Amino acid sequence: MTTTDSAGAAPSQGGERPLGTEDALREHFDATIARDQRIEPRDWMPEGYRKTLVRQIAQHAHSEIIGMQPEGEWITKAPSLRRKAILFAKVQDEAGHGLYLYSAAETLGADRADLTRRLIEGRQKYSSIFNYPTESFADVGVIGWFVDGAAICNQVPLCRSSYGPYARAMVRICKEESFHQRQGYELLLTMMRGTEAQRAMVQDAVDRWWWPSLMMFGPPDDASPNSAQSMAWKIKRHSNDELRQRFVDMTVPQADKLGVTLPDPELRWNEQRGRHDFGTPDWAELKRVITGDGPCNDQRMERRRTAHEEGAWVREAATAHAARRSERARKGTAA
Ligand SMILES: [Fe+2]
Ligand SMILES: [Fe+2]
Image 1 (cartoon, helix red, strand yellow):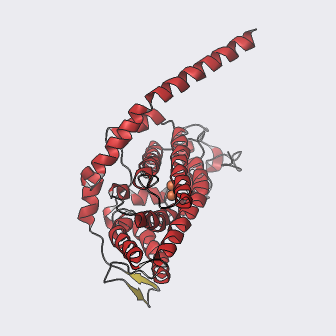
Image 2 (cartoon, protein in one colour):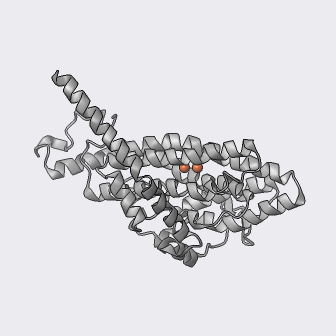
Image 3 (spheres, helix red, strand yellow):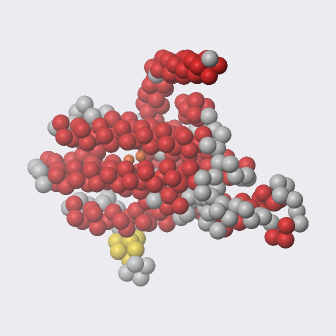
């Protein structure tokens, strides 16, 4: 807990108002954000800030867990032991990311079981990208390259997010996402050096995942009502459109090196802007997928629900074990 090194200082100038009143607390909060320092769990925060964070972190955690499914399907079908081991490790990392994030949400007073229930009941969302099917092993490579690449664009700035536990969780997550992106790209490089059929598989996967990956950054800025407040609170550091642009600029040279074509006739370098111009994603499609009508929404939710039900005995056993341990500890202390 490092927030307020300056914590001793009275939050209000002049010190006329007693500490602890809502105004003084709010002033202290605003000043902490303005100084680019971290808000920690023990600090006062506006209810809207807490709610926004719980929603964002929960949605992020759910995405990590649901995101295990599209690639998880390929663990048993991986073409070699080496590829299986890599994919296994990657999917396992995503489970770890989910756990760090649920823990970060718990520091805000959220209850993990409750968040899971909200997901399963369809009351909380996860990233639209995981509602698309993985049709070939090349999809594993393209997901690593695009989806983990997009995650990096999104998440590196979150390492400087104003909420301490979230920012710290993101540091480790980003390191692992970077490994995920490289393993995907390395798989694709290998396939591109293979047969004509393998090259065609890669191009096909690129064609199918490009636009959904651009949609991962969310709706355009003028249709993203919560963004401005999140940026003012420094939960978010860049707008959806800015992050999308960064992703495109980062990915185009990688596509050239790989020897694939990105499926956008409007994609070209803009000398004046020093950035790429690109076409408009199908926002109607994004809306459909977010509201439950994507190609795999039902399947993803069904599997998550089943996994949760099938895990009930583990949760019960763990709870009973914890209770017995604390009972034993209590007796030990009493003795
Ligand atoms: Fe992840
Ligand atoms: Fe990842």
